[in-house]
Length: 250
Image 1 (cartoon, rainbow, N blue to C red):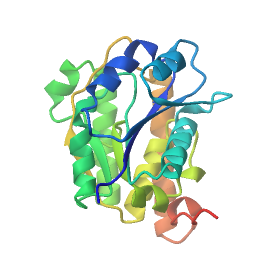
Image 2 (spheres, helix red, strand yellow):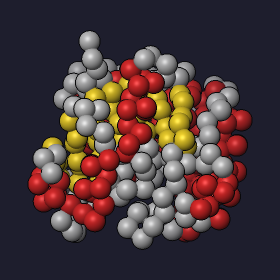
Image 3 (cartoon, rainbow, N blue to C red):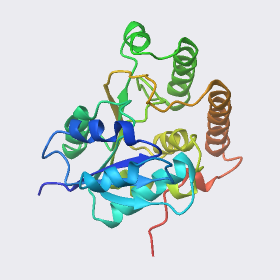
Image 4 (cartoon, one colour):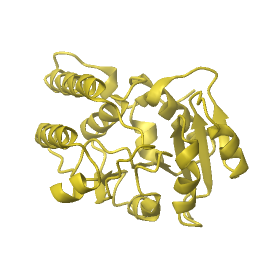
């Protein structure tokens, strides 16, 4: 039986790029597109409804991680077998959706990512700041060594999940901020989920969202804290519920 695929778009002020993002999703690839708006100040909500998307609107801003929690909660409630998370700011190439979905549908992976750093030249030519490229590479090498994975990039926002992955990882306990993504990856590694990635172009331009240097530093130190938590958990010094299978919903 064909799996039900839902694309989720965690949105904040994405009016200028939303339509391009949606148009790039190949027809027939997903069964539904769910846009969760985190109190945008522009016309994101109205445009989403005009495009025929399923639109949910937060009553207050919950942050990047908080937005994703609503996305996954609602996608699972709607019966999704595979969930693809696409940033509606056009930073990631939505045309790759069927490839992400295919590796999960074929039971090759439980969790897929887009890798923006196939080569250094490609990433920098795509507009990635040099300092961001450097820290991305440094952390990715460290995290691969820490977990035994071999991902091309640990900091991508283009992701696809099997229902199994979303029901196994206790993401409801995660941060509502940007480190949510890192927590999810390390949780998936600890819990033995099969992760993979495919190359995707780096796109940095004025309308694409990107955290500044200060927030990137906070994100980097938060990532190191997550890694320390993993170590303490593996050594049995601190058994954290973050790295234990999620309890089934009642």
